[in-house]
Amino acid sequence: FWVSAVLMLAFWPVSFILANQDSWIPFFVALTLLLIDWLLYLKKFKYHYFLYLLFPLIHPAFLFFPVISLIFIVISTEGKHEWRNLTLAIFTSLLIFVSLFSYKNFLAYSIFTPDPLAQDNLSKKISLIPNRNLARIYVNKTTIFQDKYKANFFKSFDLNNYYFASHPQESGDGQNLIKFPYLALIVFLIGLYYLPENKRKYWLVSIFITATTSIAFINNQDKFDLVLLLPVFLISFYGLKKLLETFGIYFWIFSAIFIPVSIIELMRIVIIK
Image (tube, rainbow, N blue to C red; front, side, top):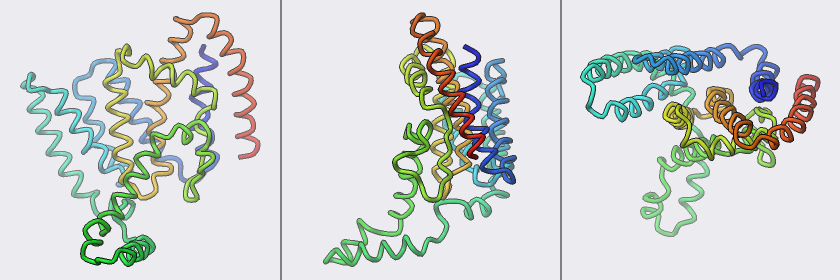
């Protein structure tokens, strides 16, 4: 069980470090921060979400992470806890303060950066519609940002991005890393199926949505998506646990195939780099 779990966890960090030997530290700091938040959540620490305010300080591109997490914090209060109303006000005030220092730097990494090629493509689309004024209603500058955001957002939900290095649609501006052994897709789907039974489902879902929604604002979310390692792994870990507890013999069959195949695949990553 633990050999399989370690193999699932090892792929993304190993391939990431090998591909980014000079620039991997800030991304792992963000991941470590999320791991600390997970541990505090398990300990039922009430103010664990204040750690999210550090994300924009680690890298300005993470500016929207605490902003979007604020939505889930508001939902979780439901107006029932007076202490949360005060801490929520403090969190919001600190968030505004942090944003003042991060916003300009965030723009340099965001989908809102000037894109001459996208503007040129937009002009071509407008010219194809006979009524130019009508064209500008449906094809305008905002569609540039919308298209980029949608492409980034749905990429985070693409299983190929995690288990098959984005094949067969590898991105030219991404590293297309092998993030998880491809056979781990089986336990991930099992974990996803049994997610409603998971006692930690609120944290897993809220963090995954917060991460995917926030990094979608980054023009090139490659590397920044490392924060998704934790929620995806924890869902897979839960699926592996359910496979062991519920299906018995199938767990041993899976392990007998998964462990040697994944070790060989991991060795290929290290050797080929």
